[in-house]
Structures are given as structure tokens and as C-alpha cells.
Length: 212
Ligand code: O7E
Image (tube, rainbow, N blue to C red):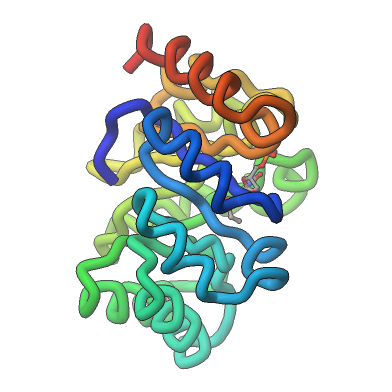
């Protein structure tokens, strides 16, 4: 993912297209999650692509042939990247990567969720997930802005992979701190789209200029 502002907008809102059009100068990509795609349909991925690269966050976590089918649908609808879980094991992640390579697309692997529950099981295997993702040639990782010390640790193991970090603002994480800990991008939802999205995105981009 090419970095300019370091911000990826998580558009978990029904007003996504309008917001994307208004904030595109302040963000590097848009992330599309289930609340949006299940209410608007898959065509929203293509529509959003006209405003910037789209990361299809379909949290792929299935057996390889189904994981591949999900990735195929994301890429054939214009996604630039997909997010897959890593706990599925290497066969499913590899199936997603094989599809991505046909589209020149990118694959980001979830390490541990930014929520408190992410520590119950996922923290215990996150390092192994990073190692698997790196060995397979994945493009990047998702790691929690709510726990910068974990970003720092996972960064050491990540090699050239990029780190995308959610959990900023509404979940308590701090954008600049996540970047300083080793994240390449922050993923930000409510702190942008709730209230004045343009002003929120502009201020965040301004703030991140110092650390990018
Ligand atoms: O808290 P917000 O409003 O800034 O939204 C955060 C977004 O990042 C939301 O779309 C959520 O699904 C996503 N996210 C996390 O919040 N935490 C994680 O650990 C991982 C993700 C994510 O995008 O990865 C896919 C599972």
C-alpha cells in the first residue's frame, strides 16, 4: 500500500460513498467491512474504488477453497487488498495469496484483535502468525493500536511486511503512538465518520505529518 497520509478510513457506515468522496485527499485507502457490504451489496467495493484503493475486510477464515472464493469475489469487484485471518493456518492464507497474485492484489493477515478479547487467545499465537505470513510472502499484518508494545514486538518479526493498525480513537489507541511503535498505517473508523468527517480526517492527517 502506498503511504501518503498513513490513514486508512474504515467505512463502517451507510453514508460511506459520500464520506469517501469528501475525505479522499486525507486518506490512503478505504476499508470495507461486513456492515457496509451486507447492507449495500458487493458493488460498493467498485464504487468506492473510484475514490481510492479499497481493502476488502472480509475477515477470511475458512477452508482453502472457500477462502479463495471469497478473495476472488473481492478482487473481481475491484478491491486492491483483502484481509484474512491467520489462525486458519498456512493452507488457507496461501489460497488467498494465490488468488491475489492473479489480480496483482495484496493480502493482510490479522495477528491479534485490538479488543481486550484479542488477548485471550490470539496474543498467544500472534508471533507464529507473523512468521507464517512472512514466509508465505504476504504483504502485511493487522496489529492493535490499543497495545503499541505488541506492535513493537510484531514489527521486529515482520520483515518487509507493512503493519496496518486499528483501534485508534474510539477504542482508546493513539494514532501517532501506533506509528511510532512501528505501524505503517492506522485504520480509523468512528473517529473519522462520526461527526464532521472532513474535519476529523484533516486533523488526523495533520497530526500524523509529524511522525510519517
Ligand atoms: O473502532 P473504529 O470505529 O475505529 O473501527 C475499527 C475498524 O477496524 C473496524 O472496521 C474493525 O472491524 C477493524 N478492526 C479492529 O477494530 N480491530 C482489529 O483488531 C482488527 C480490525 C480489522 O480491520 O481487521 C479485520 C479483522
